[in-house]
Length: 299
Image (cartoon, rainbow, N blue to C red; front, side, top):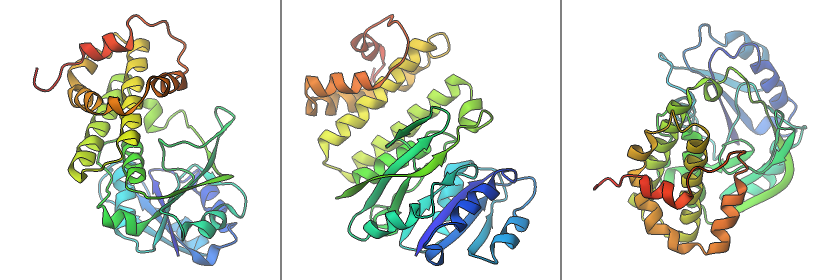
């Protein structure tokens, strides 16, 4: 069986499309759907009543709005199937075989990683930084006690990176399974840039604390994750430097992890990761100057 977890906050205008895309799936009889109501103004009883006639669906209610990460964790804690899929309440699965394609291979792997259609960019990608288009094993989550942090943004990226580092084998599925809608009024898009980057730094500080606690020894993969985090902050600083002076005082732990792990990447790998960031800005300082300005926790 597969648990599909949908965090939902005032999503009544869009969630029916999401549920219809689940109803279309060929393996519908193997699916349990959980709408996690993140303290919406009204409940989802109408949607549950409609779709309960054709599939297993349940609403879980939170008393206070805690954000999508907390809602997803609540869904994981209150479900029990071996396989887990996350979908947002305004997105959809693509085609009637999206989940059966992942189900057919998950038994031999720790994770299935498929392609996403990003509608806003009109692009198709395999994206490591999000939960979409992926199938997870509950046994991995339980074995390594992987849980979402309670931040309001970027918690999904940190969760996904931690899960991947705990995997022994990942299957990359060459199929598009997920239709992602980037809404203008979403939490991510309406956050002030300084608040968003602050959450990003906090989420990745949490991530590397979890990596260190678990003594994960995938040093090359960890080095890639920390370098991507450093570059992400660097380019955002270049684009918003008047608002992001806080960055140098908050990134001390990430700088410490960078110094610890960067030796596991060669120069070509470092350059290739740099090229991945296609930001249209003229650097006012080099990456090394940026890193040198970050204050270590001990400084």
